[in-house]
Image 1 (cartoon, helix red, strand yellow):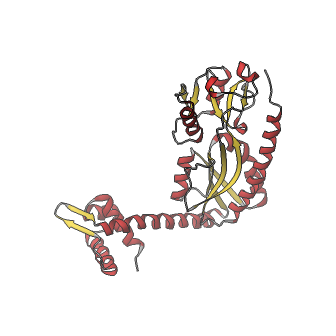
Image 2 (tube, helix red, strand yellow):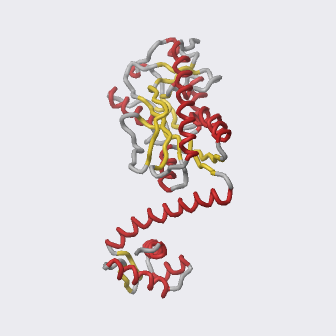
Image 3 (cartoon, helix red, strand yellow):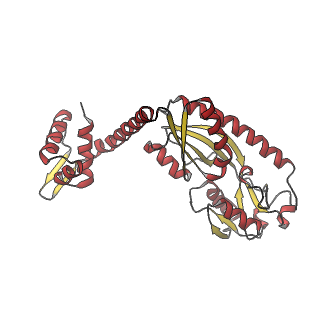
Length: 311
């Protein structure tokens, strides 16, 4: 049977390129490292490490084992953290990833409701969707709020389980004092404005902007690239540029409005994502609370868009 120690030895050899350096990294002696490797190769009936005067490297079979071993050790570390949370804190601590715009509207009240119904604590980690998905995969998060482009997700993975919270159409964010705000819908080809793009090329609105450029047959001029929601709203309010947005991300008090485009830009979906093996009752309860909260936010957003303000 393969032991965790043996897997750690294989990974240390891969990372350090020699038995001596692997032993130092693990705080073992070289004979201990050699013993673990010999025992593992004997049990598997395969050579895992090539030893040379210049060091040591994994064979192709050793590389396969290292890839699997890395995932196994990550899962074990995740399980140990969960157990330590229950043991040391006396209460479950959920670590939840989020991004600022929608997280600020959904999570505060959801966390309050969760803590009123269960003995649980919540720690928030802010990041972009790509970063949050990576942290979910590494076991650093229990769950995350993730947004993506409906019909063309980039975050689908067999070990992640998404619960859809909202789907919203992409609109154009314009200044409330701009002549564009007087129009019922906007033709992207005739706006005559520069655009604000995302710093992340994989971000949903940036992908939509690239598609719109391709459909129009020309590049849409980008004024700047930022993911700071306040900066985006300030630039748009000053009529220096326009941006893609969904209705729920419009920040009150900035003097901006959203207008639907003539072109079909697709839908942005918001999901509460957990690892497929996460069966914690607190996660299920938080998911249910967020489903209800997102439904209410969707109703408010739809009602607000029914009679959009004019300047």
